[in-house]
Length: 428
Image 1 (spheres, one colour):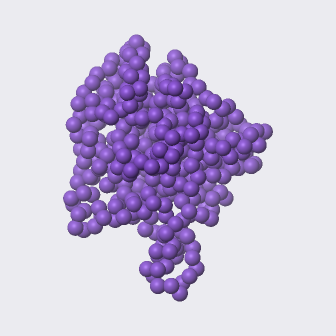
Image 2: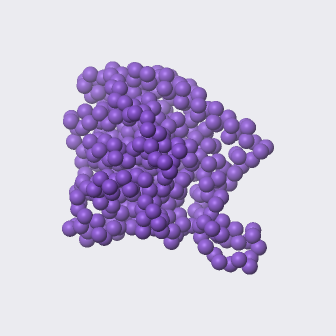
Image 3: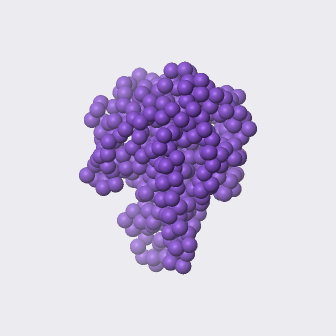
């Protein structure tokens, strides 16, 4: 790459790449989140416990991009195993390109920053509860999370299998659509991946759910109301409705995701997977404890809570009930969106400063996902797009539609882009 030196210099400040491919070409560049495997490049998923793991294969999405002539440029930093909303739960924190003292969002922090600073670039990322929409909003790029099962998860280091979705970030909906058509489709290595057709059922009605508007920063709320007025001027009809059940999305999500995360992380014992100790004379408990001590605090918290909700004494009370909540919410949202999109701000606050985000109590940090969790919990496709700039910082809105109607979201954003100019501080 001609500007490799510039990219490396900026990376020293913003920390968006965990590894850079020195042999990448300039044209058609794509990056890959650190929990997605690229042959020959370390895949840590933001965790010290996977330090030194170099996959001998490419994830399906990476292989498909390479076959279409896209050039892999680097691995992007992230919260450890995807556990976080601000990109601070890892040893190296990405910085927001609009204000380096602020977070880039999480868990796909590096992917959003890379997209915001690099021209002609696509970021392959992953979302469990908002890990694409969140950083896309904070960094002023388009973040697309497709219907669960449309993109193969083969080669993804899982957080929560029933919630993880590989998606994309870019500077325009057109770039995302091109890449989506490349990476989607059935895969013999992933039985949850489907060949279902993707539709483009356009809607002229936008629904705002009252409960989702609670707790939103006043500046964002005023800006969002102005957005709705603009969209009405573009021919959309805005309706407001109540959906009482939606407030159960956050507890249901965290119960399910933590239960699945604790199961997935159980394999990192130091024997076959994870940190290798080679101290086989130690007793099992001592060996196991030492091998797993490098997990970060948030990872340990989720392992403990996830193991608890799966235990026989409380499984019915928490985990099974959470699964029922997810099914009911999916039905309610699908019914609501038969003739409409659901629209909301993407995040309830502006990007906080890094030190402020790091000090947030866990429950307050989890509450920041109130707008992104409902579509992620139910596997619905959604997209975050920039629509305003407040005090020099980008603000994003999130649009949600029914399962497999993914193209309609990208068409909506494409129409919006014709009347709104995205701003980028860097254009490498």
